Image 1: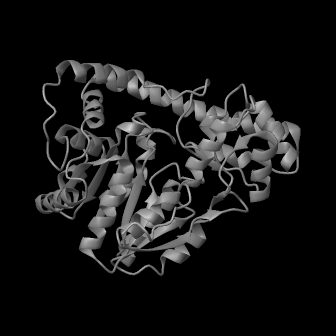
Image 2 (image 1 turned 45 degrees about the vertical axis):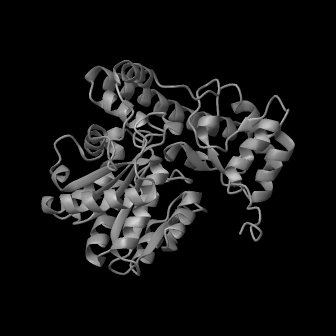
Length: 394
C-alpha cells in the first residue's frame, strides 16, 4: 500500500531552519522560525516556568490519565486569563486542554464539521501557513477574505468588511485575536466593534486564534477582541496556546474554548468536545498544562511571569524601533515606519521574493519568501549587519 506514495516538499519554514544551521557564515541571521529569542539568540526556560516545574516534579505522585478534557485547573485559569477573572462569560463557556494551539485548531475543525458539515471556514489573506492545511484535513472548505493592505502595510479594513458581507449564516470566520501572523497588523478597538456587529447581523460564527496573548499591547489589551465578541455574540470559538507567552513550545500546551448562548449549554458542549478529543488523541499532554496551572494559581509566580512577559514584549517593541532607525539612517527609498505600528513577533518587511532570496544568498539573512520576519531574531549585535544587507537589496 506504500508503493503509490511520493515524498512531499519540506515545510518552507522548517526548511529555512535546516539551511540556516548548515550556513557557515558567522554573520548569518535567522528571521524565519517563529520562536522568541533573547539578545544572545537563546530561547530559555522562563524563571516562573522553572520554579513551577520544580514544584510539579517534587509534588507529582502519579502519571495516570486525567480525562479527555485535560487539567481542570488549567482549563479554568486559561478561561479567566482570556475573559477576565469575574467575567459573566465564564458561566457559559467550556474549555478543554489540547496538544498545543495546533491541536486546538484541529479540534475546532472537527467540531465545526460535526455542527455544520457544509460550513465554509474563512481565513484572513494572508494567514498562518498551517491554517489552510489544518482545516482542509478536517474536511472543511477553506476560503479567504481581504485583510492586509500590502501597499500601506496595514489592515485593509474596508476591503475586509466588504468581503465578509458575503459570508452566509452558519459559516465560520477565523481572526487572529492579536499579533497577526504573518503581518503583525491588528484590528483596533473600533474595528473589533464593527466586526462584532457584522457577525451579529450576518449570523456567522467567529473563531479566534489566540497564540500570542501578552505579546502585543499587554495581557488585558490583547484580550479586547475575545472579550468583546464573547459578550456580544451568542456563540464563539477560541483557540489558545502556551507556547509563546509561557515559552512551553515543545510541551504542547493549548486549549479550545466554546462560548454558548447560556450556561445550560455547558454540559452539552463539554460532552461533545471530550468526544471529539477522544476520537483524535484521547488524552492531552498534562505536564505543561500543570505548570501553567501552578503559575496562575500563585500570586508570586503570576507576578514573576507577567514581569518576564512584559520584558519580552518590551524588547520586541524596542527591536522594531531600532531596526527602523537603522534602515532610515541608511536609505530613503522606502519608509519602514510601519514596522513600529505592528505587534507581536512578526512583520512583513515589504520586499519582493527576489530581494528575499538575495538576502539569503548574498548575506545569509534567512526569512520566508513572503518577507515575513521574526523580529525577535534581531539583536544589538546583528541589527547593523541586517540593516546594511536590506539596504543593499532595495
